[in-house]
Amino acid sequence: MSRPLDGVVVLDLTRFVAGPFCCLQLADLGADVIKVEIPKTGDEGRQIGPFHKGWSLYFTTHNRNKRGITLNLRDSKGKELFRELVARADVVVENYRPGVLDNLGFGFGTLTALKPGIILTSISGFGQTGPASKRAGFDQIAQSMSGIMDVTGFPDGPPVKVGTHVADYLTGVYAALATCAALTERARTGQGRHVDCALYDSMVSFLGLDLVGYAATGVARQRSGNSIGISVPVNLYRTKDGYVVVNAGVDAHWRQLAELIGRPELADDPRFRTRPDRVANADECDRVVEAWTATMTSAELCDVLEREGIAYGPFRTISEVATDENTLARRMLIEVENPSLGRIPALGSAIKIDGVPEPPPIDAPLLGQHNAEIYVEWLGHSRGELAQWQEAGIV
Image (cartoon, rainbow, N blue to C red; front, side):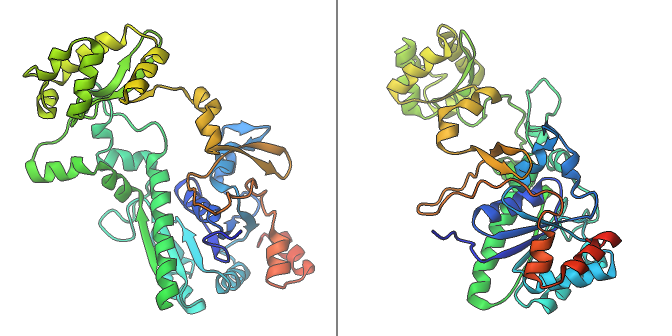
């Protein structure tokens, strides 16, 4: 069975998270992604933990299902080999600081001359243009500067970053989406595109209503802990043995919840009758709900809410998510075949398309694992040449 990007060749020049995660999405959709790393040392991600039997799970998470080669892009012979690769590629993905790829001699104009219709996807901290474009940018920097940390945490506490690499992962998804759109346009027009995605832009877009609301009204949303601020009761409530998110912000659901609590009169209480009323009296409403949830275990509360059709979600630890039946049924935690360790855990794909097979369970490549396959079998060079290049540090 075919996959949407079968036959598409992607040269992955990226490191760390956002770029590799973009290329992982393309690989999972069927693209032949060739990860290009520095000879001898490779991607810095190989040295970042946690480790499993000496192997970086950080590297596996972002680079499975790719082929891997080494190449020195600063060497004249290395540049020549890269030009050969570009001539056979459809997409180049890079996350150097803006200007670096041009300085290496491989700006978009050069790539287009080598391969008309090629797509260059650039991922950076602050974009290819704008006053901050030359700055280095990483996930937490983007979270801090974008305002995301201003709306994360509790009102009486300091700004807090989101618990995972949200800027990196979101930018990776945006970049993959834009790359697929550029491929679709190229199929229609033959024209390539330079895709420009930035961690900062991703996080500003993540503000969504909070940014637009301030621009229109001059009122900034304050940090609100685990509530969402615009709908009540929607919060993480304490139970006898843990926590459960209850979402009963819709008026009809609030009436149901008031009945469950055993206080149907609350549905018509002037403080709580409508959504705006409850938002204005959020603390009081939350106290009423938590006084009820605290009388049950999490399992008991979930059973009650399930029967009544009120949306809920029990708080779970990562260890619980790893063994959750839905995680496993949806293939979000899988095993892949590591070249030296055998089968090891890996992150599954969040993209499911009817009739499209799931990605093959192949781990991230060893450093230079596919050098012979690419340089000899694909580009047609001799094994003797490859050995010379390896000795010289070109590959």
